[in-house]
Amino acid sequence: MQVRPSLSIVDVQPVARNARLRLGVGAAVVLVLVAGVIAVLVAAFAPHGSSQTAAPSAVVHTAAPTANDAPTAFVHVVGEVLRPGLYQLPAGDRVIDAVSAAGGFTAKADQALLNLAQVITDGEQIVVSKKGAVSVAPGATSTGKVNLNTADLTALETLDGIGPALGQRILDYRKAHGSFTSVNDLRNVSGIGDKKFAAIKASVTT
Image (cartoon, rainbow, N blue to C red; front, side, top):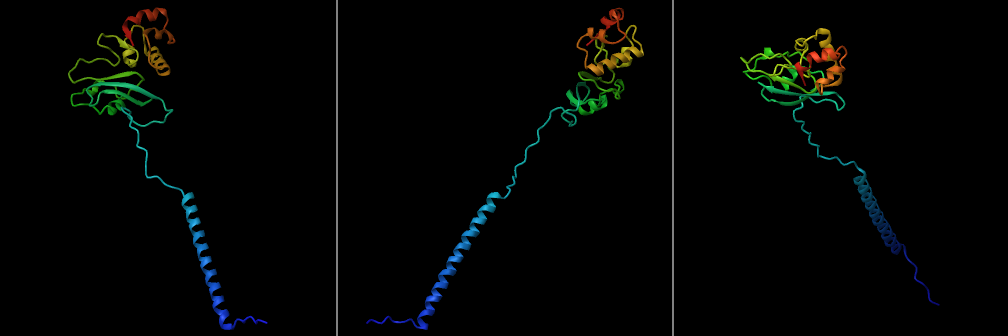
């Protein structure tokens, strides 16, 4: 009968130490793998900022930024200003605002010929005359006709049969409906009948 050798206490201790060592190494590997997975997830879901910014768009000949739905008016500023041209201004601005948008007066400008406090109208042309030039009433043209789209109350009152009240109605109509597209639009102004229209139609223009 063959007798199996028995393990002594000395033989068991190395076996136990080897088992604990393998268990410790396995746990360390598991921890490293878990830490790697967590790092990948954090990097994937973290918000990423961008260093790029949109370049602001330039608006040519716009005097001041306005809201998209804010009413505006286009005016043509010519003559003795630093930057003559077509300008888009907020509705309700005055002649002085249009002149400022065009760079201001030149040294040759005759500022006294303009009513700087007058409210601008869409489609208006503002002429800044040179000092010593022949004085032209606001709204008048080189032919002597009154421009219905640029004339002020004083210029309108030079028309036959047009007084302050009727002249103001013309200005109110222009403000409410925009520029006159033709002289015939005067017929739509309250108080201007066929007889009065016939008397002034040759003296006005648009």
